[in-house]
Amino acid sequence: MAEPTQIAARVDGDTIFRALRSEILAGMHPPGTALREVVISERFGVSRTPVREALSRLQHERLLERAARGLQVPQIDPQEVIQIYDLRVMLEEEAAGQAALNRGTADLMRLEALIERDRALVDPEDATRVTHNLEFHTTLWGAARNPVLMDLLQRLSTHLIHTPRSTLSVGHRWPEALAEHDALVRAIVERRSDDARAIARTHMETARSLRLQLLRTSAAG
Image (cartoon, helix red, strand yellow):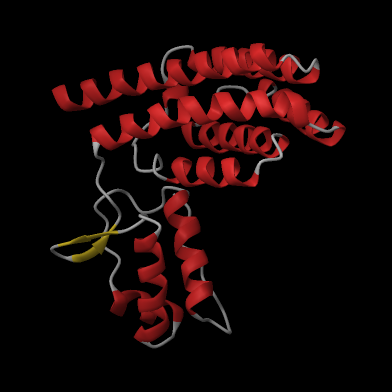
């Protein structure tokens, strides 16, 4: 596991917020990990005031939650996870349809490059699959040229970081997902909006089904 980011100078609340946010999104602080003001202030060499500001912002983004021990990285809420997937299905479908109509040449080049990069990987780690998959989807959202839609999708994606295992590491899901990404890009290249929507919906519905399986397995264990 990577070591927490160390900040050398000119530390303020925003600097601490960005450092901790990056660490949480990267999975460096597992669900249930308490983030204490005293420890963080000592780490960054600052008073507790900017630390309190940073932690408050993280709580506002729902990257931290209030618990008996103070603020901690949220535990997994299976019901909320499924609700997030339900919304992702609808919004990813809309983003794909709009991307097919609004994308530019640079968007297509970037999407195709990301697919080529991912296909060249040999048995990547789960964290790599998650990071690369999010990069692909973020690029697709940008191609839709709809900042409101992109903001909603980005916010939803942060709420899935607390799940302990990616659906992309289930069985043969990784190569299957890459094939679906390729089909989606082909539809976007050819401006087939309806096809892009259908592919995106099926892609996300499959992810939702796999997440349900993982949640059931976790509950049974």
